[in-house]
Image (tube, rainbow, N blue to C red; front, side, top):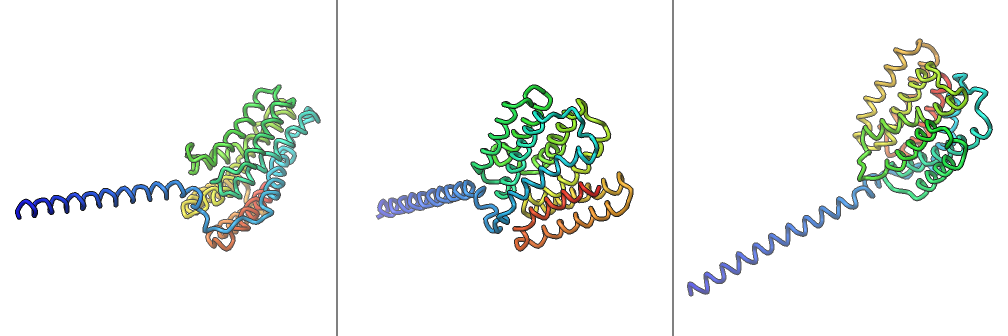
Length: 278
């Protein structure tokens, strides 16, 4: 009887241990499955962006890049047609790539994004732009960063990735246009480029990180943008309008998901208007 009782107790402990082992194994498999699905469903509760987001982003960003040197008076006579057309095509490809990144919330690896980046790379290495190493290196670096942004292994979905995107968006295409037009970059043009840097850093924050963390970071980037406006510009109609635009776009980020469809359009439009009035 004692042996039977002992054997039953051992069998009970064995079955209990096996059950606990199976339970924890199932939990681990479930956690791994959730982790694998997380990048795909992280923002699925948010509605899709407006269908016009990609074409309008392409147009507005290209206008921002080309209007910067034109308004600053640095579009020199040395910029030939053989340099204008590849720069323009490159601008369209890269701004379209940013549009696809915004539409996919910088998460999904859309084949159309990489098609645009392949097109911009092809333009770089098949045109006269390849003859200027400085221009080639800077523009290719921009393509490389855009290609790495949606990759989880690189871990750029944070403030560092946002900073890299805003920096290259500001100091890539406009600087190359000014450099090719004059064979140098004027210091005044570089100083005025900080308007675009702080504005793009702020307007891209909620699009780059469309969750509570992005809204909190928007308080920081928004404060930096306002400080730059107040300390480096004479207060007037242009600065006041830029501040109103920034406040309006910031408010939109707090009433999601209702306004998420239109927020990229509002952010890109405000970015262009700010560059025109500052």
